[in-house]
Length: 86
Image (cartoon, rainbow, N blue to C red; front, side, top):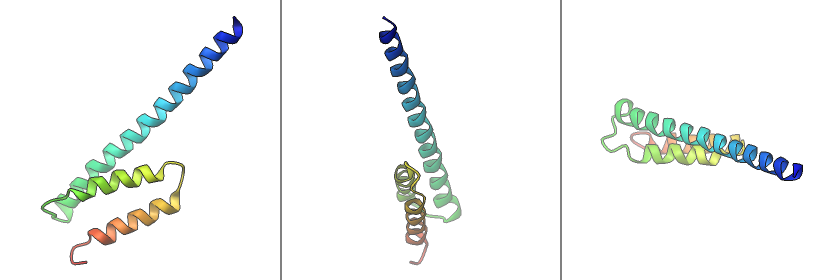
């Protein structure tokens, strides 16, 4: 009976950790999307800033697993690609 209780506790703990990780990623993605929309619209004066939130969420998704170099490359590409006149 103790093995069943231990397995159940472990499963609940693992599920909690997964949900916590997903919540953090979802929160980061939401904030990144909102900030990118605001910056593209208000700072860069883009009349249709639809790509900015998608790029921000894609960057957050690519960053899962501590891929810092990949994140930096994506951010640089988004910044250079979205710069007016390029």
